[in-house]
Figure 1 (tube, helix red, strand yellow):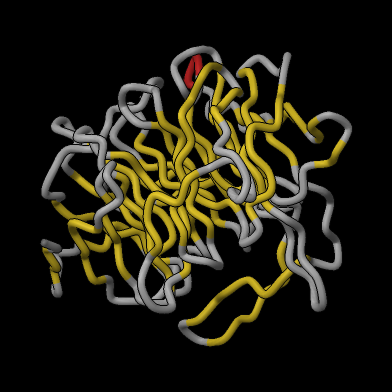
Figure 2: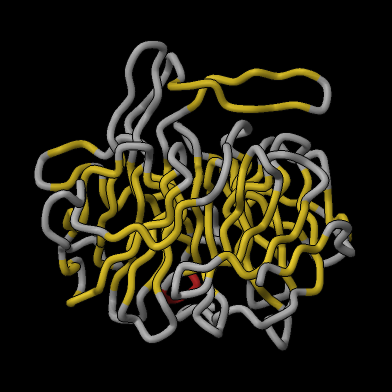
Length: 312
């Protein structure tokens, strides 16, 4: 049975953001996030005050807190934009696209360094989301880039936090690999495929290595859940229970999927493009959600605690 929440108790933490994504709960109680269109990484204090941590070339997309308090950034290389009152949205690869990469940012100084630009000699196209595994590295997705008449395939990857090794784990994810997460026991990798509305799963065998299903699986994964109707998938978060919490586009929902692949909980959002969710607070029961086209970071009490991330 699916529980649906029609009018959640949302609190606007701040607004006026330029397509926010990648919220990260910081140790001081603030939330760091990216503003993709503004090409900056922003800290939002508990009272909603905004300050700039760093600006980057390209476009910051995913964000995670790594070892020693360093922020790790998925940089998608740049989007072009459609902008009208109340509606900012990406439309494709930017004319000044500068290539995809994984970067690190020192939140104290704003210093930006490049960690990875390619895997096995193949350039990263549009890194999107990442999650640390607590074993010296992180899993990350590459959505690819969309152009007027063609698009790249997406994929899932693993990188060592110190920049020493990066490997391709699963490819292709034809509709774009977006949200990525690991089960609390570290045994399952999840990837949300944007354009198809599919949530994929792989068994993790080690850093950067997953067990592959045979043909006809296109990438060795198994489809854990096919979302109904026209729904596009964005980022995801993991609950302490092992549930997978997916930001669901077009329908404007935050959708919880059980490890068995059942949709068990749906929260309706006030806009069609909620893109990211993270959990924070002392009991990990505060959900922070980015409403990207309207430029808001909102918060709400969550019905179950989120998984406490390795470097959180």
